[in-house]
Image (tube, rainbow, N blue to C red; front, side, top):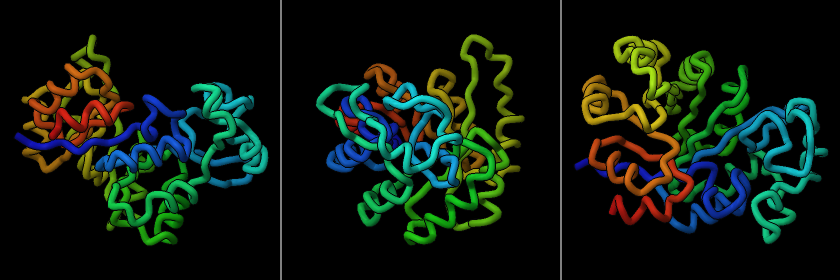
Length: 244
């Protein structure tokens, strides 16, 4: 049986405010295999770690990240929405995230949330000498293709989502061709559509598979049995014992 990597989704976000330094540090404390994060450009072209394009859900701010400067974003509270005990947690910069994880042996799954982010992200990764510690991924095929062409030494992953109630939308041959043409090393896909046959087919074509976002123990066990290469979860503390 293949032993899948345990990847902490936005850090240890089941118990801590997602995409904050405390969530990432708690994931590191668990000695997870990998951590996932999301990056956006601010209005002044700085890279920050947040999932949504808007500030409202996970901070006390409002508006678009792309219309807000880094200085303004750094004044926001990114922890209280989760619990009062996390009041004062800040939105991390991409630099802070990389500095925290450098040298830990934990690989970083970095989602490029907008077009045109591949090259600036790669330049920052190279600045920290972390080319062999990251996987760059995106729902935008062009981001994946540009990343691989600009930095062939960096691992890439293409994100896809399929409606489990519309199986006809999942054309495996077209999906595999799309992955190979974008030079992606990995496929990241919603776990509901993954089964053993699909996992084998991807493996036979040399494609590694990461399933997201898996928080129920029964689904964790099923995907371990299926033989996927990585499982992305908000609760790495639950997944780790099952993998062991």
